[in-house]
Amino acid sequence: MDKPVTAVIVGGGHRAFTYADLSLEEPQLLKIVGIADPNPVRRKKAAERYGFSAEHCYENARQLADAPKFADAVINGTMDHQHVDTAIPLLEKGYDMLLEKPFAVNEDEMSRLMRVVKEHGSKVMICHVLRYAPFYFEIKKRVLAGEIGKIINIQTSEHVSYHHISTSYVRGKWSNSETSHTSMLLAKCCHDLDIMMWMMSETEPAAVSSFGSTIQFKKENAPEGSAERCYDCKYIDSCEYSAKKLYIEHPQRWEFYVWDSLEHIENPSIDEKIELMKKSSPYGRCIYKCDNNVVDHQSVLVNFADGATGTHNMVGGSSFPSRRIHIIGTKGEIFGNLEDNAFTISKINASSEKERDVETLDLSSASSELDAHGGGDIRLVRDFVDFQRGAAPSVACTSIFDSVAGHLTVFLADRSRENNGAPQAIDIHKF
Image (cartoon, rainbow, N blue to C red; front, side, top):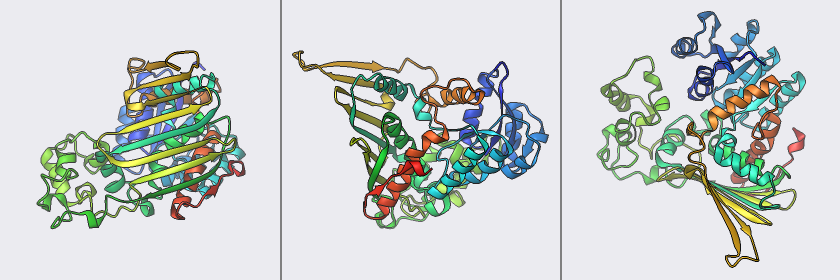
């Protein structure tokens, strides 16, 4: 307990480095001692950043698994469809794991991974970072305290901003389910369905139905006479989705995705970035003429075993990002917006002239560590250290077993969507 947990990065992308950076801020908790990644630039970057030698740089997870075990755990930040194939040999080797969500992309993968975890008694924690955001963490505490009684209905929503959906789900890595092996609901909203299941942990999901489609980002909506690439197009200065507006005028926005092919160049110039957009970058394509096939909006309805219901609405292309939650119980309700970092508790009070008691919690000053996940990233890694050490983890801790309900609900919601909303029964116990 008085030594840091040692960990190897597998998949040296943005998320893995974000988690690994706890070792720089709190070296008494975590020490990064190696990396497995096919990109030599990222291997070198990790070795220099975290201070380990080249002998602990590996090209892939299999090569790492074939070497003698030299760390306590792995931080697995590979792409979604690589999680299971990279995790299994390392779990079999004896490593514990902090595994990025989604931990599997279908039911078969989930079965394979769960079987290995059980066989080897592995400690696997899933990166559901929103649980650790002060906003959701405090709401969960109020729910556990029984302040709004038994939950009747829970509503969550996520509005994905226009520049986020463009970068990740139309032009980027998660735009095509055949290449990314994930749906948009799985890649973007398994966080939200996990939050729903966490708030509803006294029961379990029993059935799900879902509808969704692509309305906006398709060829028939392209402006007349538009080109295949933004820098060849007459609408480059008027289209809100032009590569010039989104990426050249805002070069730091989504830089870890948009400029990854220039990472071998130290401080690439704006001219080099423009040249990339003109010629080869997928982010330079017309937003309406990409190979995207994932939905740009989807609605999910969940029926729980105790009769409660839940809904989640994902809408892409909004003017600003937003995650909202509204929980209605027998004694009151809780509602708020993650981006505001504040929520309201409204409790029934028949004796009051106002008919209710209202309390608003502003958590904006509760953390100096707010990040893209409302302050959850750093807290998650601290909790993983406790989880790996065998200490008592927080109420937010998501072992792989706690993550099954949310993942399975997403898999079956997509099956329902593909079958015109036909309800799908959910059985979490078969895993």
